[in-house]
Length: 235
Ligand code: ADP
Ligand code: MG
Image (cartoon, rainbow, N blue to C red; front, top):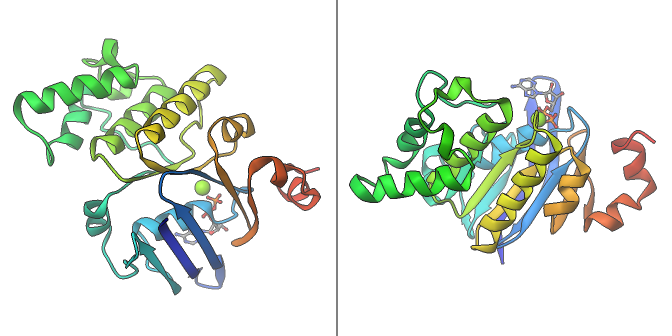
C-alpha cells in the first residue's frame, strides 16, 4: 500500500525549477532511499512532503488523504517526522532534555522518563545524557536528532542525509538502527550519498537529477544503469 504519493509535483524558486513534475510513491513498510547529485532537488522534495514549502504544482497524498494544503504541524499529527539536513538540536541544553522536549507532547511522568531512557540507550547516548548537546560529536548530534524525530513515534520517518559527518562505523550503526525501526513497522524515506549505506538499508531507490526522476528500482539494477553511473557517480 502507498503511504506517500507525490503526484506531478513541481517547485519553482523564481526562475529556477528545483523539483520538476515528480511522481514518487513510498510504500508502507519500506525503506526508500532518494539519491542524486548535489542540487538535484532532494532536500526540496523532502520539504514539500513535510509541508515546509507549498508546491508550485501537483499534489501530495498521505495514507490516501490529500495533504497538499496542510501545514507541517498537521502532517506531523498524521504521523510524519523529519530530520532535516542541517542538525538542529538544542545545543545549550543537556542531551536528555532534548529528547524530553520532543516527548512532552505525547508522554508525561514515569512513562516519559522510561521512554527517554529507551531512546537514549537505543541511540547509544546513555552515557552522555547529562552532557550539553553542543558537546557531542557531529555524528552523535545526528543520532540525537534522529532520536527527537523518533520521539514523535512517526509512521513515516524522513531523514535528510542522516550520516553526514559520521565515521564508517557510525554510518553502519545508523543503518542498523534504521533497519530496526523498519522491522517494527516504521516506513522510512532517506536521502543519502553513501552507497554502502544505501546498499545496507534500501529496499527501493529513486534517483533524482536536475529536479526530475532519473531512475528508480532496486539498487543493483540502478547501479548497472550506465546513465546513472554517469550523472551520479561521475563516471
Ligand atoms: P539537494 O538536496 O539535492 O542537494 P536542493 O533541494 O537543496 O538539492 O536544491 C535544489 C536546487 O534548488 C538547487 O539549485 C538549490 O540551489 C535550489 N534551492 C533550494 N532551496 C532554495 C530556496 N529556498 N530558494 C532558492 N533556491 C533554492
Ligand atoms: Mg540536500
